[in-house]
Every structure is written in C-alpha cells, then in structure tokens.
Image (tube, rainbow, N blue to C red):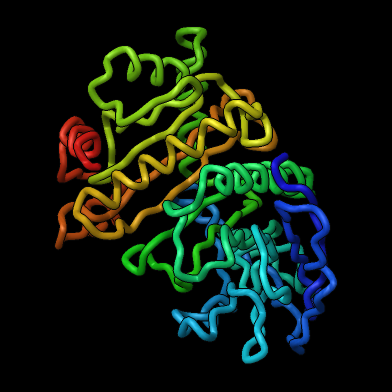
Length: 363
C-alpha cells in the first residue's frame, strides 16, 4: 500500500470517515466534527419489478441532497474557520466517508413492508454508499493528479472493496466517478463514489450470463478472449503498457467509450499486483487527457470499475474500467432518448474505429 497510515473517526451523526495519509505522523484524526447533524436517514426501499426481473431502489431522502453549492460552502473541502463540511481536518490526501444521502445503507427502518402487492415484493436496500475525495484541492480534477496519487487512490479502492465485500448482504462493490454537470454531478470537488449493491445489478447479470454461456460453449474466459482479439487486431487500441490495454469496444454504445483492462485476469482491485497498480495510473491519466483534448475542453464522463460479484459467478468476473462520455461533438450531447431509454437499444453516432483514431490523435 502506498498510503502510510489509515485513521478512522466518527462524524457527529455516527457515520464513518477514514483518512488515508501519504505521510507518517498525521494528526488529522484528532480534529472532531463540530457540526450538530441529525441522525442518518434509514436505508432505501427495494421494489421488485417482475416484468423485467429487476430490483429498483426508492430513496426519497436523496431528494434533499446538496446541489451545486458555491465553492466557499463545498462539503468536500477541508474544514476552515468560516465553514465546516464533511471533513473536519484542515487538509487531507485521500478521504473516504459514508454518504450523508446514501442510496443503500445498513440502517433499516422499523416496520418495513414486505410487499406492495403479491406481484411486487419489497425489501430494505441494505448495502453501503461511500464518497471518495481524491484531493483537498477544490479546483483540481482527476486528470491533474500525479501518478503517485492515482496509485494511492487505487490502493484506497482496494482497501474499501475488500472491507465492504465482507459486509453482510453485499452482492457487488462498484467504485465510480462522475465528472461534469452534463453527467449530473452535484458537487464540483474532485471525488468518486463506491456503491455496495444488495443485489447483482442488471448490467452485471447480463455480463455474467454471457460469460457463462461462452465458457460452456468454448471452455474459455469471455473477456480474456475479447481482450486478446482487440490486442491482436489493434484497430481500436488507444494506448497500452506492459500490464494494461486501453481500447474502444467494437460494439461501443457511447460516442466515446474506452475500456482499460489488465492483461492478467483478476477478479477485483484488491487482486492487482503492485506492478499492475503502478502501471495503471500513467495509462489512465493519458486516456483522460485524450478525452479532454478531443474538443479542447473538459470532457464530461463516467468512469466505472467493473469488479467480480461477491457470491455465485465470482469466477466469471474480469476486472476492467469502463470510461465513457455522452459528448458526441464539441457542442452536442448524446441523449438517451426513445430507443435507449425506453427499449435499452443503443444507437451510436460515431463509428468505434473512428472514435479510437480521434482519441489516438488527441494530444
């Protein structure tokens, strides 16, 4: 691990906050949360949709979450005499804390109903939601981090994935970052999130089913063979090093989409070796700079770590990062309209091979 110490405190409402310190001798955990916060909300409600065999989370308390506050009232900045946010210390390296407005948590409200009607079972949305602050610099962004800080973030995600995966009721741990108001960001400070889902998400279910069918038919691992085919063909490769390859999927759904995968099959971030963790940052930072270079301005994106599930089907998982943007031109966004939103049938505006070439050309 690149961080030198890991110190945890409790915020005034009982939520956990963890400082990951890159230097020895940090006293950050000595600063108390001086706010007087109400108790955290009860967890969300899961409702089963029998028509598509999916669970939907209903989290009404999130309607009141913080929305684009001014920079001097940012809850993710270090504490200062004029404002106290989520982080009590006056500075930090990387911080993780329980989300104040979680989609999933272990705080189950009494008297939870068990069905809406006989067709729609209901259960508590037991899980966990955490916020990951990459830097104390409010005006920075992930692409401006040093490779050393990216390595720290990877180690932090490994720490959290291992710990959260061991919590009761967790089906999959999903770290991600949203960037840009076009994506729906509500806080400008550089940060990501970690969702611990109580059920296997729909996309993961599809990926597991496809991998299981391929294994049964060929005896091979699906993602391993997809990555090998992309590396051999080379047409859609954006960048690579000894341990990782970044490529545009041949059937990309989004105008600009890149997957970054390790050459060795591993289930999740904790399984990455030191060499693989070191090699990830330089390649990822290069891809992020290419995204920003496409149109000469900050690119809105979602960066999503696909990890193996915790339970059945874990052996089918192949860790990879999916990075994609809804921007299809300098002044145009890709909206999920009728076909995508209603039917889940994507229509891409940019040929994937063209997207790969544009990203290779973007300096």
